Image (tube, rainbow, N blue to C red):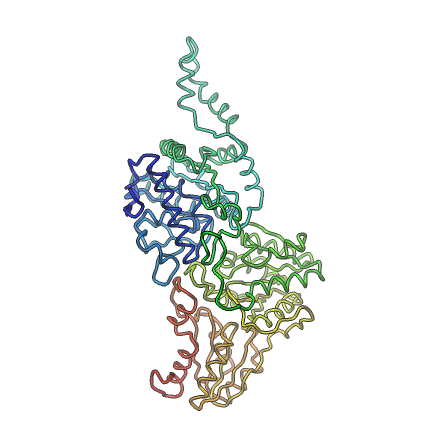
Length: 635
């Protein structure tokens, strides 16, 4: 059987180990060829090919439920659940998503793009199954990195309290999240990988004991205690921890041995109550380059499959915002030992790996634990340090309560640096940084800012470090800057709450925030061709707004447009409209940003075009709204 013939995972049933191994090779080939062409996550999926086939061999996927944590490790799952034929559209507009989506396939039982959710979701499904009197298996596959997230531990704690609720948790232990795992749990798991397999032997043990003449039958009341004592001796230290939490522990199992995996999963399905199967895998398995560089090949842009090298750009690109952020922060940290960079398992993504390499004592990785990261930063700030919490916009959502309760209520000077703010592209709805303006703007004591370009980013980093009277947050986008000149030192901080005028005109007031400042200037140029002259303001701050600058201009000009790359509800435009209304300044205002929809995966420029956020589209909206010009007036 060829992989292309598999449209339903139940077609794996009855295949021999040799046939499954052939399918495994074909999955890796297709996986590698596709990601090399389109970009995407590489190492996670390559490491779980045999795990996927072994587990699905023991399940009836017409009834049973499988929940993959995060979902970026589920490319093999997609290839055997009817998406082989269009897998080459991976992460492209209207194509196969890079994560699991319930609307994409009936086999995607729970969608996710953030870590540590699988056990909670699986337990909820298992409890629903039992409440309805139904009979099906539920399995959660969670990476060892996701166990650093408190939510996974909360779910384990709850599941272990339900001894009659059948639930299978498969721990995919590859010693990695994106970067090497940190913390006590991964350290213990490393010890376990070196231990021999621990098979659950109670039935065979009991049968052997009963064969002893004159002894076996007479000791049956003591047999349970003897079995448990023997089992405690056999189970490695962390296995015993899971056992004490109420799980039956099996492992570690070779995650690339199909025969062993199938036998283990079949055994696990027979056990009543929650079971944890510990599977040891190699991230990037089957592609030597990815095995050797597991951090670099966690995910890749399009690359040459034979060399592993990225496909070169056709023209030089300006430095990425993340690189400028990291370089500037390192320079400042060299001069200020109180600066502490904090990441939640995203050292390479945020650029903080540069700080780790240069100043390891001023760097902290907390693992996939954003809530802990924020409160840790609050503790550091309370003791006079200058914590810089570098967390993606989408992931900081997970720590909303800690931002309010532990930082803002106490007015502690934590500097939040929100990478990947705005439209992020191929990762889709779970990773779009749409909501940070709205969810931070409503919290007292918080200052919010966004740079118009990479040079202003440098100044805002200094501004954030110098702001010691309370919390402050800076959002910046994924991708490259504009190529404006950068400085190596001597950056001047910005005055809090002060905007700047970039262009003057009497017909329209355009307020741009962050990434929409440059489009605002382009819109003004287009409008000028229609005889309309606009004043353009780089707002810099959404909280506090520069009302001293904005109010007189709004009253004088009488037409206001706001531009933002984030959700309109509660966003920058809402802040401007509220401020004007509160000041009894009633003028026409047009808010332009992301409407109340989820932005799917696509190239960022494709998403912006679909949302009407390109400069010509914005200009046309303005002409229609304020100047009664017909549609398609802009050419």
